[in-house]
Length: 595
Image 1: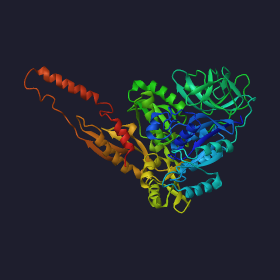
Image 2: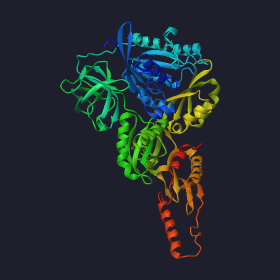
Image 3: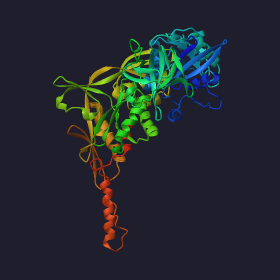
Image 4: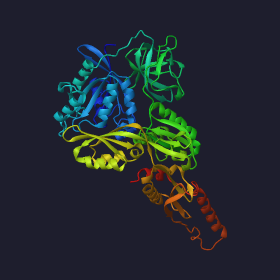
């Protein structure tokens, strides 16, 4: 056990985590030259296309120092705020962390929040200053920022360039010297923490775990403590680039277990594995349950695919434990699921993974957040979508969730950023100059205002410099109204939204204008109206169109004309899907992009 080191890499998005992981694998010869590629651990096409890490990935490396052979278990983590749950799970399985900071950009918001996560778990932090080979690297300045942040000395900071491989040997030495070996007793009852799982269509569910105490052998009879299910360990092993079976794993090891589990509900991330005959006294404290920030309805395009969508979501949830879902139905879209996401990027990724990995065509409704409605009789109900809001005469007041947002930016952009936050009904709480031209601003903002386009706008007004991190800080009363969209007098529940009274009129006006462009012209006038209760606040009309299908018939038998008219009639019949109007998928997406 003294020769095992478990560590993860944490950093802000785009500071070079995956590239550094590539170099570590190359130097330790874990990946052969032939198999080497950029972002070698990011095995999803989606990750390579977007250049971001979505999943944390575990891999074992072997490193020899002073004649001693060390086993290094590396977990590469995502950097985007929407995937912070992945980071918290990786940190629970490690004793140390490499804190990677980009020398050209300095410390950013997600760097700080990931660092606090690691410090809460008592991890040994090794600061790495990356990208020092670039011409615009501010080595001295960023080193001072790191020293100020974590209170280390200048000598503790390891300068490196993940692209060229400079300084990677020093990082490996520091991992061996500074990160403590795992504690635990191989003779004690088995206690292993599940930190991830994937679905394999041939072998069932593969769970990744970290053994805290005890020893696990192939063929052992084990049980999962929370679900109280018992299985045989058909195969256990370690995670190299591919899974490699082993006969036994002991305390401190990170590995996988295959036990032929078919149903995804039987495996929970954060659960404890122990022996049936000699169980451990108590389960390991798993990480706290995830709190979704954004809710949206996900519906199959073809309502017959409902059960298939449920199975796909369950398999996806295994691999992405921060996704939550429950069944719901909608008048316009039929049966589907109300899904909880950690943010808009997370929602986009889940939708794309459903399409790519499971061939599911889905419609996603307008995302919203969870509100609390206080009724006149004293009851409190949670409202996840606008159709769940009771009638106004039953409501005493409605509370909406607020977040504490920390924005780190250059001093040049502070005016524009404060204006953006105040436009989003934010309250300025604090501002601190970290250095002469870097400032940290703390705002309290309603979460509902942030989920749409706040992050995109923040990036564009700060030319990409500002970084943003947030956490929920409770509920506050707010004047909210339910804005409904009516097509020919019928409400389309998938397009309705809960919004603040001040935003309702402009939002209704813009939604009507946008839908006028997107809804195809029919053979009849289509009235698009925005309404609050029974009051119409905006209206647009899509003018009728009618093609003269019999124009090309010069004389001849009447049956020819009748055939064409029958064909036209069939076409009209097909258009009557939502009321009498078909709302294209682009309309649901366009409502998100309203500017």
